[in-house]
Length: 174
Image (cartoon, rainbow, N blue to C red):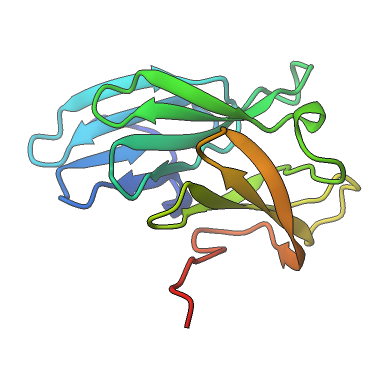
C-alpha cells in the first residue's frame, strides 16, 4: 500500500489462498497489518507484544492467523508466545506460551524461524533458531498441539537453522 513505509522480509507476510488479503508483520513494528489486495485499503491493524520478528501464518482453513510475538530484550522480562488472531477481524482469540517455564524440559524455542501446519490435524511444527547456549545454528523443531494450545515436544535429532522462509515443509507421508 502507498505510504506503508515498513521494512518487510519474505518471512513476514502471508497471502490468503483466495489472494484477497495480505497479512504483514513488519520487522520490529510490534504490529500485524491486513490489507485488501484489490483496493490497498487497511482491513485491520493489531498491536502485538513484539518488538522483534513476527511470523504470520494462516491455518489451512484460513480462519486464524498465528503470529510469533516476543517482548523486547531491552525491556525484561522477556516474554514469548504465539498470538492467535481471527483472520477476518484481527481480534486475539488465543495464544500459545513459549516461555521456558511453560515448555517441556529441554525445549526453549528462541527466535522462531518458520511455522508450518499439518493439514487435517491439530498439529504444527515450529522451527526455532538459536539454542539457549547462544551459539548460532542448531535450534530445535518443536511440535505444537493446536487443540490444547501447547508445545508438546520436539523432533529428536532434527535441528533448525536460523534463516529465512521455508525452513521447514510438511509433506504427505509416502
